[in-house]
Amino acid sequence: TADAALYFAKEQGRNNYQFFTYEMSIRAAERLATEQVLRAALDQSQFELCYQPQISMHTGQVSSVEALLRWRHPVRGLLHPAEFLPVAEDIGIMGELGDWVLRQACLQQKIWEKSGLPNTPIAINISPRQLRRFDFIRNINAIMQEMGLGAHSLQFELAENTIMVDGERRGGVLGALGQTGGDIVIDDFGTGYSNLGMLQRVPFYKLKVDISLIHDIGTNTDAEAVVKAMINLGKSLKLIVVAEGVETAEQWQFLLACGCDAAQGYYYCPPLSADEFEHWWRQHLREATS
Ligand code: C2E
Ligand code: MG
Ligand code: MG
Ligand code: MG
Image: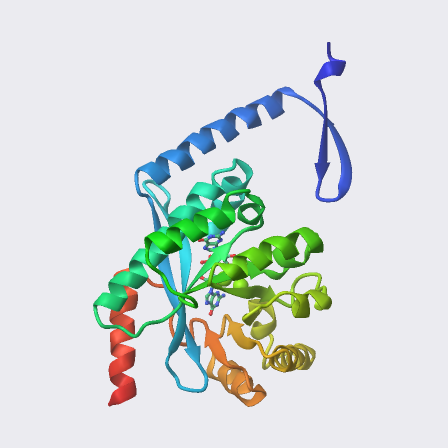
């Protein structure tokens, strides 16, 4: 009956009841098509990782390298996560994609290590959906063992919102994540709902101040005060504090004066392909010693 086709869709907190319509069945078909396209992209190696360094404000050296996912689409060109991750999350391919990212980042780390570059932690991003998978921790352990990775060679970046929602259950998986030997990083700090109590219950290693706050340095004194307070909070909890999206010398100087530990952003280096980044890194090492 028509009633049986009544469909409840809850949209972003608003109670939004919709009828299951012809349009929605089209959407379901599109979803299926997208799922097939994403799976094919994984099979056909269309995903790749870009790398961006975090620069220590104490030594000027690369203190860790973040792996950022890209999709080299045969027609649309190089796509950023914003253009495909929400769909990937939705159709449940994030587990496989996440495992691929982890394995690929570890392989790259091995390659750089063998080629004589300094042994440096690689940071990978973890989405909420990945964290919820029953085999998440098991896969990480398996891949780390397979790759022979020691403690502190990996960093897991989780957005503040991913961490803070649903405190208790997250506490369990975060504890297990800490047991893998990798270090846990709070990403996009300052944008979410902070359950500050969580900051002391979970053994976080690093805190990344969100781009949006860094961008207002130099133009908005309130934002500057917030950045300063966040750096102080991180430091007093003995966390390493990193600023994301640092684009100007002015931002760099401000952060340095605030005692920030490291910076990541276009000011030093944009995300680059593995080869380009290796080239940048060697150049950076030569400049430091000359
Ligand atoms: P994120 O982890 O907060 O990464 C920082 C984003 O800022 C990256 O965008 C990076 O390219 C960009 N960025 C770096 N420096 C600057 C700068 O100076 N100015 C500006 N305006 N932007 C800068 P990207 O690569 O598009 O990634 C967006 C988000 O997608 C990431 O945010 C992360 O949450 C997610 N993501 C990326 N790769 C992966 C992945 O492998 N797995 C998962 N689950 N999520 C990923
Ligand atoms: Mg990140
Ligand atoms: Mg971020
Ligand atoms: Mg982000």
